[in-house]
Structure formats: structure tokens, C-alpha cells
Length: 178
Image (cartoon, rainbow, N blue to C red; front, top):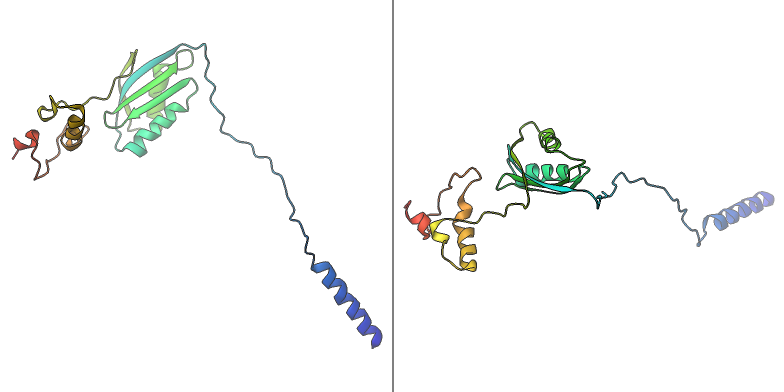
């Protein structure tokens, strides 16, 4: 019986010494990760052209316009791409040796069947965003015109249809409707 107690005591003591290490370091594993995202390298000797074209079928700025913009920007040979949802206009700068207007059209229509490219044209400079040309905004200082555009001209839908003016709007463009 004494021998059994000695063996049991030795086993418990050995287990306690092995199990209670204070300086255990975690095992570190290194895993190589291959990234599929490669940085686009632009050819400095390339001849870049600029194209503007309309896009029909977009219904929202984030889901439609940004998706098309990202798809165009990821193309090999495309230096920059911008899609303006409000004007339904895409502006793309591309390498003429790698990209053609036909390829741009195919890229836009491949995003979804509802998108249609119209009025593709080459330009020297991209067109600036149109400002408000309503009578209530003409002849004002830049700050007054900006405020007027926010309040008065933003009430237009993309297709040129006007939205209803606010009931308490005192602007000249809304006074005619009252």
C-alpha cells in the first residue's frame, strides 16, 4: 500500500510540474498569401485619348454608376474613368493602342443588359458640370448662385422633369407655379 501511495504521489507531482509551465510560448506559423490584386502599370509612352458617352438605364448613383465606373477603371489601358449619375455621362481616358470605343461600349453593356451607351465621342477635354441656368439664379454672386442652385435647381430629375416646389418656396422659378 505504501508503494502504491509513493507511485501515485510521484505521478501527481510529475503531472503538476509538466502541466503548469508558466513560460509557454504560442506556436507561430507563417502562411504565404498570394494577392490577386495587382497594381495597374500605365505606359508612359502611350497615346491617351478621352471619350465621353451617355449611359441610359442607370437608376441609382451607387449601385449603377459606381459599378460601371469601377468596371471601366479596372480595364487594362484605362487611365481614369468617371461616371456622373446626374448627367448620365461617362468620361474615360484610355490608351488608344489597348482600348477602343467598341470595347468601352461592350464593357458597359456587360455589367447589365439594361445599360445602353449613346453618343460616344472623342474629346480633348472633359465637359464641365453644367450649372443652373434658371432665371432665379442668373446675375447673382457665386455664393448666392450656389445657394440658389441647391434650393431651386436640385428639384429637377435626371430626365429634365421638374419636381414640385416646396409650398413655402419664395424663389422666382416657383412663384410662377403658385
